[in-house]
Image 1: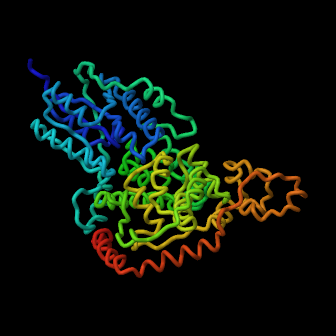
Image 2: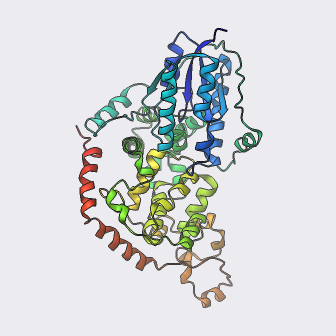
Image 3: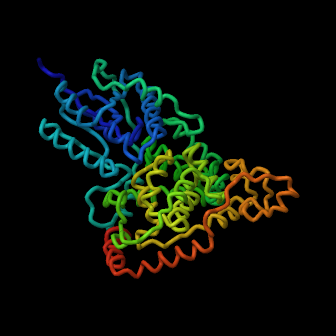
Length: 484
């Protein structure tokens, strides 16, 4: 029996129909093509993953299906390991080409891709991988990286057009199991809605009105929920490209009016790619201190402190409010993310690896290339970045002075007067009686001032370590020569 010839577009973190190079090349080819997306058990059980991620991807795929239905096309979804799926497809079809984006992912996805590459070579199938957001594979340093990035952003986003597919519905043994399907369908309304159209709704509303106070409110945990772009989940899972966002913001009619905020947004789009490029060069960021000198740093790793940090019950109102907000919505602003890591690693004296997967699971916009590089930067284990130690009380007073955000997420403090909202442990028994208040909220397990001093002495002292200094030179050569 002669097998049908076709191509495959393998979707990963690129769940959209526009500005999509693999789809563009597949449409140009004379053969019809199959769009596939995989729910891979090994990755779904990996410690960085959670149901919120899979739900977002599932609904992103459904959004694509809605856009493609007029072309008799849909995304074929599989619940199986990639090697199983491609083995099945290569036996059923005469596959000529596989088109996909390169994935700057964790080591597990890198090993998977290498296994798939071997299988495709064995079957004489060409695999064409495309750059994602100008992240370059295989570079040894950052010479000309900035220049290339801006050159890429100056090009217009791809306009994808579609021909009608003649492929019949595919029958395969890897259908989504009913238990998984039920979980995927049930995405909580407290999370941002998935899909290409939702992504554009956020970007359009940002440029129309929300972005006017972007720079002013970016550090505020409450106000930033409206004033920030809020497109990070869509960039992370590929409902939108950095180029699409960059082009839309930079060419918007309100740019001259909201110039400061819009420029801030564009700068952060570039920094986003900068950090993913770091991870592309060294995915060891996930498991090891990128500066090997810090591997010998000792931590107390108090289990009680760690657990209270995870559940948002530390006794520090801003820390607990941020963690609980993350649990319910999947998003907090950058400064509060940095504060959570700082408190864990510095004040609580815990190894960054104790909390890195926990936050990965909570972030709806989890992007490996940003997550691990930023986590280590805030933990102070890169050696080349300025050490930023965020005092949670100061952050609370500076960015939520009336305690509105705190009271929203820590209802135990609803009746606490503003003068005590940032440090409720300072309320005396007499105050409680006068206020007729019963405080059901824990006191901090550490002395913030003492812990901060101890952490600063440790982390700054470690910078004198000979191996740390040696590693600094290596890292600077790779990651910071980017001006030419």
